[in-house]
Every structure is written in C-alpha cells, then in structure tokens.
Image (cartoon, rainbow, N blue to C red; front, side, top):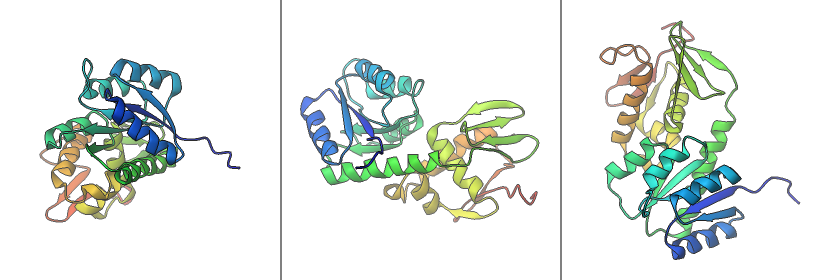
Length: 237
C-alpha cells in the first residue's frame, strides 16, 4: 500500500450540483476533496486544512472568486484553478494576474477537469523541486529560488506564482532564445500555446519588477518574431 499522502483539493462553488459533479470526479481520481459554498467558508477551510489545490468559482454571491483569490493568496501558496461561465480574456487575465494557475470554462467534461488538475499539479510539483539556492545575476539582481522572490538593490520583491515560473524558465535557459510557444507551454500549459498576448503581459510584469529601465532592458530581451532571451549572466554578457 502506498504511503504517499493523498492530494487535498478544495472545491468552492455556490451551486450544489456543480460541487457534487466536481467532487464525484475528483474522488474517482483518488483525491481527497473538501467543499465550500462561499468565499468566507473557503478561506476558513484553507486555513484549517491547507489544501494542495483550490477549484474556485468566479461568480459567487457576496465575496466573488476574484476577491476570494486575492485573500487566499495572502495565506496560501495552493494551486488555484478558476471555474467560470465566462470566457472573456479580461476575466481570465485578471484571475491569472491575482495568482490563479489556470482557468476552466463551464460547462466542462470530467476528462477536461482531470487533465487540467493533473497539469497544474505537475507544474506545481516541478516548481517544488527547484534548487534551494540564490542565483546571482549581477551586483544589482539576485533570485532566491527557495523563497521564490527576487532581490533588487538589496530589497526583496515577491513574485506571483506565474511570474516566478516564467522567470525560472528564462533563467534556466539564460543566453538562449526561448520561443514564445515553449514559454507558454512550460509556464501555462499546452492549451495556452498561441496566447502571445498573455506572455507579453507577464514579461512586462517581470520587467517592471527587475529592470532598471523598461525602455532599455538589461535582463530580459525581446527577440522579435522568435521569443525572449535572458541575459547570459554566467558568461557576463
């Protein structure tokens, strides 16, 4: 018998039928599931049970999913997948910007649910295996891989989960041009393969946090029509 602890997933939705549907399918996959029907209960369960993942409905009465996510990110690094009936790009980017890892648009099939959950958990697991060290880019910039933040001119600046995954991919391939498609697949998943707008948005977020001059980047370079390249700090480019 496996001694591995079961992955705990909190399902947050004000529709009982949706909660039952999601819970049933997650139970069949072997996950341990918790339930909450509003944002306040969800936050209480996150504090009490520290789940590995939260499936969070956007449109809930009272505290909606966005506000719940904002508060959740103050107390937990759990993976978050937003559930929504809306497929607007602005809503999707807003959720990702607040720290969500993925989006599923209702209605969705058990197969899609299972696939998205596994993909996000896999990305989270890979992030957890990163080296526990501080990478020195230059005298001005260091990246703390253990705490997942950057140190700019001696000041620590926290990164959101998606920002960190993007920066990690850039650093791991420093000096090489990484195609748009590769970054989108590794950071967000294959379903975001053609979402170049999302990638540009998060490159801008990173640059605002680490670059001394946005008009003349020192660390993250745009290779037009190809992708992005991080400064080859090991060679002292």
